[in-house]
Image (cartoon, rainbow, N blue to C red):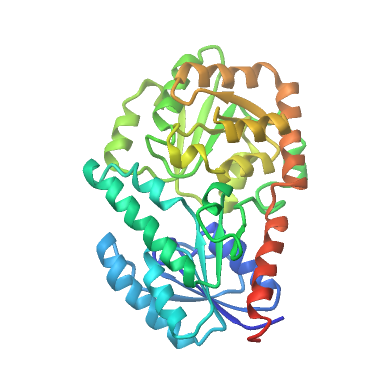
Length: 374
């Protein structure tokens, strides 16, 4: 196989789970010489056979769009790679420059940007539809020129040319977050529930903490692993009575995530019913399933189909703390049924929802695009 390839991001961390740990690692293991251009970071990087090229980290969206893109393009051109694979919509212009220079280019679409813009509170409400329409037009134009488009959900896939677009979902790596011993001893887990990921109001932090106030007859706690979106939100949540039952870990390593989930009774993914969440596959849902614990999840049609088919958890109204609390109490009161749910989820991941299956599609795309160049 072989060949030099270059992944590029200005918005994601160098150790991003999808880019660095999954895609770059899979390609490296297949024999490609892999380079990743990403913002400077003090975060530790796992031992992955990937060459990192750091660029200055920009803290302003505008500077990231202009100066960050320029730094990324300069580093990319130095590499003279066989293929360039970028991960941020703000890099579409850079991708077009590379394409017009005769390079092979893949655009990896992680999120439904136009729909996401409609929910951005930092944008004036009158401007959101205009900016969303511009973003969709820019992506549509870029897609006409790029050699390949990768999307993470079927809904996003529908927005791009079918003959060059493939769906590669962000499912977990088998065995990454749990040993066989951990997945088979759910009954011995502490009375702890877990939430892993960015902590925001729309991801349900208020409802999760308030739910703890309704649980009185159990010694229970909620372990949070991730960063709060703002200091104001952090201070607000700390003022709630339920905070007494919260163990806040902040941003943690993948090993620490594995330990937290290995001790949890269930994983919470109670995102609010906004468009960008309703039609998305939350990676945390599948990571919880991969560790053999049941899930408590928002009752969205897409998620309901997954959870009911696998019989791996409980569905709740994410805006109702009392309903979330009732689901948590059910897990504690029915340990045998909860353990069965966890094992069902694990089997679903082993059979279907895993990165090993998805990586084959990635490797197939690379082989198709590079067969004439390598």
